[in-house]
Picture 1 (cartoon, each protein chain N blue to C red):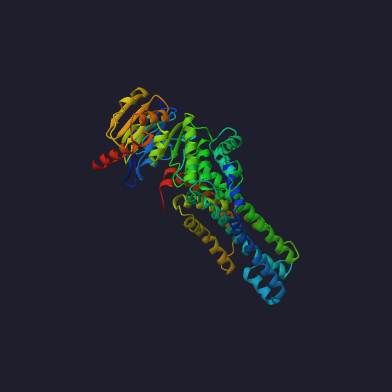
Picture 2: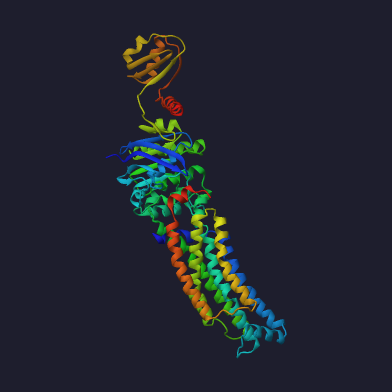
Length: 254
Length: 297
């Protein structure tokens, strides 16, 4: 039965060009801005400036200044690729319950024998899969772009592989579960989306501190983050199922 | 065993009582009406019977599944009940057929695609089956919603205001569909505030106005109501009638013969006829009287 819910959700997504465009626009920006910036820096910035960037972020590469700057940019930009899988499912999942209610499909859906768990899991997977796939595609394009401009293979390094392959799905699950929890309590889909989206703020703060050269996120941080997010995922999924009260969803209007 | 047995159902939301003391039973194959003004608690009652709300008090059995205070009907009940919701409630971007198949799968219907196609055919929606739901007319949307209520061949069908918001043509189509279901001896609960729908289709109706006011049996005597323009002694036509009642200028006749024959006989006997019409169950009178009594209490 979960498959039925997933198929329907993905079919609806495929037929929503505006939603697809909004899901693609952020990853496109996240890929294009640093790649173009890197190309422009190598083309226009004096050697001294590139050296300063290497020094600021403490990155040295045997491949020369260009490779060092590329590595610095790549490592510092990784948190942005952790924001993506967390943010993208929010666009879909925040609509999941409130959207059903707004379209008046919630009552017929709840009148079927399908269990709460099936609805929550089905909707979650349907939001997760596109988000993770888009993130992976964007990460691959970013790495290819950086490598092409540097003229050598800089990325993905170990942190990138761990971040995109392990952390991304965990964060996507976190963003989605958070959106389902919020959507179960705040039934206006727009309010739910805005509220759930605030969960990416800590990651954005980390990105800002790292870009400012104040902190340097290493493998230990990413491992700890993965463990913490996995635990939070389990708790949030349990909460999402518990909070999905069929009667309350039908009777609450705000 | 009755298809639905409800005893003292009550439900309130945040201290506001939606309905209380609702008790009635519906036999298998019966078409039962739930009548009441807007906000009377009809939809709340229907939602309790559909397993969407848990009653605050009272018990019910629907298609053999129990509902108790604080405990809504579970998946087994929802699988045996077909609910037509107040609003059609489908996904705009999916076609009519995709929508119906989706719900057929959720309802665990046998062979969902074939069952959906059969209903699309039956409800004359074949030419529109591949159109997105958003593009369908209001009447088509409602027919599709009725098809959804039937897609899993439920034991009990609950119809919540099937004609509300429809134009006259769509209303007629939907009424005719409900009439077909009634003729098939399905167990139907028809929730409406249109007395004529209940008069035409139901064998009994529960009047609800915050609480159950009464359960009214709808009589279907084959009576002819003749309004007379002048006093008349009907003795000359008695032989053509099973029964004949004169009350003021109204003559109520249960004819033995066809209507034109009885009218001709009346004219031959010197009756000056103002109008002739089938005599309907005086549901409206009963309803207004019960409502007035309920408000006085």
